[in-house]
Image (cartoon, rainbow, N blue to C red; front, top):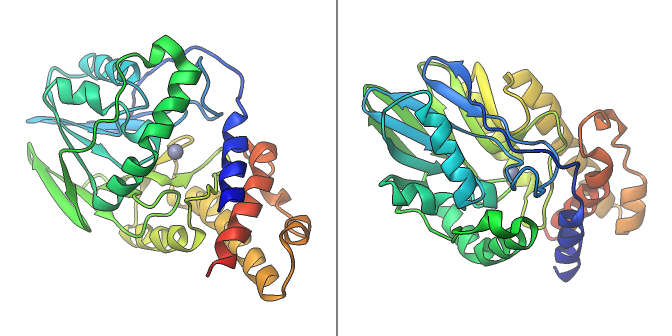
Length: 305
Ligand SMILES: [Zn+2]
């Protein structure tokens, strides 16, 4: 376990090129918007917003999906929403316990929104929130001012439907994956899925010490059953299911199948990493930075099974 944490810390140290944060909502279907965050690592330039979030405008208020990494970014999200609609933000959904999914909660709570997450996200937030905040403060300094670990107001176990202004907004928890609390937001009428950290496209996914390739693939299978037309991934551009399958599912399958076989054959971690050919995914951003990290964390996961 200690070794996995060390690799995690090393993974965090990598930082992509810095540039200024711009939050421009992209309308993916009527009333459904995505903010496409930076696809590199967290930097001072992107204010830690290296992930996507979004919002749904209904006739009776706005639902925000993921509050961003800081008070400041949450406020910028709100300002961008106010350029689209005068409806108030009624709910915020945190699709997981990764910093950029929930550390903006304090801002949205201050404007009266109710915050909801899947129950397994809470333990993750409690376990890692202090460390996430310390890392962001170190990186962002005064841009992290006002940010606190503000936990959701309430939780759902498997499923909840929010009905607001005639829209049915389904919150679904499958099995987690990238983090133990990953959930999705499903808009059946429009066929749009906010997939949170269960889908990474354009950039390579991260297998963290707390990730589970087994749970992630199981969640992916449940997500496929919904038959989404459009996916707002947790990271990368808006896509269809086929792209999510190629760039998330197929990569997870490669890691898991290879490492499972290596462990069964009694290979040590280094030879298992050396014999893994990941080059089919080398076109994805952050490939060089994460391929070794992903391989070793998957080996260590599979070894425990
Ligand atoms: Zn993420």
